[in-house]
View 1 (tube, rainbow over the protein chains, first blue to last red):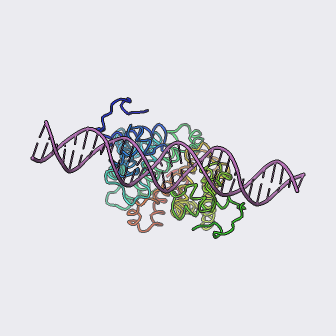
View 2 (view 1 turned 90 degrees about the horizontal axis):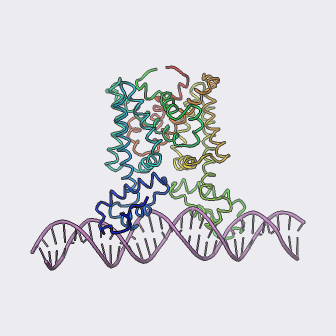
View 3 (view 1 turned 45 degrees about the horizontal axis):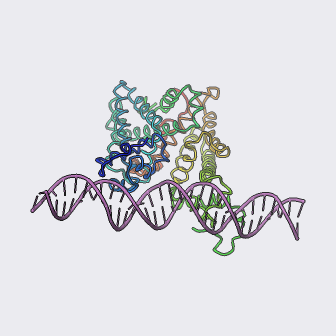
Length: 209
Length: 209
DNA sequence: AAGATATCTGTACAGCGCTTAGATATGAAT
DNA sequence: ATTCATATCTAAGCGCTGTACAGATATCTT
């Protein structure tokens, strides 16, 4: 777990402590969960004093923002990859599956991503970009496959609804209490796809019924 | 804000400190938000020493569990009331609206309710009861209005999907970043109902399309 | 009246986020 | 090469947190 360049001589100036801190944070996050993510623990993991991070981040929240930003980046790229590996209308389903799978496979990171968005008037610019690009992929894919791009309001509504549904499912998928349901429905992927499909969001983004 | 029976003589034994602590916690939660909910602050608000709560709760999490349990209780009763004030298929919509409205009007409490459920193998029995009763209302209402009660799997799926959708929407409704969308769609209720209805969950819980 | 028990206080400890003052290394200008 | 401004780090410390423990005080049982 520990970095610190194996005890001996780390130069006084780290080189790229900012990067090292974000990496340390993600390492801790994966290993110990979100509750272990204290600024001091991150500094420890990176092998520096507890005050060092304050030269690279205004406070703890700003460090977590940097972690969250990388999360949105990864999620975006995974969604993009999922989209190319499907065709036609199923691209939307693929996006939804990719979204929820990401949340399931990186529960701690996923929580940091949304915690960073809570109680904030606006997101830091770079994080907003990464998040928006993931969000727009849903919208764009809807347009590419039948949705009317001139019906702006309906399009926004459909995207928002899809996003809400995916997020809700993503959160529930992380709850142990849903395990019995997942089991009943035969494994996680079927559960996931079943709910997504039942939501009627991804396979049928058009109006009417 | 402060309790403490107005400075002078509170008897050494409180009478019902457990109740007082939960009330103090909910008061703090509403006034200062979830981040202000420290055990010490709750004890202060109730006018007792920082160690006193440990005679009524094993740790902080158990106090929050008690708060969360009351949250599920309130949510359940509000959903029940909403159901009676609607008829036919619209009862499901009413349930969804009531759910999301509760989350919007009690964002801090809503967060405590779900935080208490995170990373737990199983919920404390009483909380589980309150939560399950809210969950079952959705299921029951579906059965009352057209869903086939013998198709157990599909029913579970529909309920789970509805729950996921409502939770996702509830969370998003609490995010400031969605304000512009809400505004565009003309106020919060229309946004809420529009998304719920678009999700196709509540108004049409039956199969097929 | 006396003792067992439940409830509360006081004190303490380690860990937290964050601030400040001072040490050390780097890069630019001379 | 020397000097100096600046960037980056450490050490120490403040007030907060959750929690443990010993002892005080009230209530209950007999």
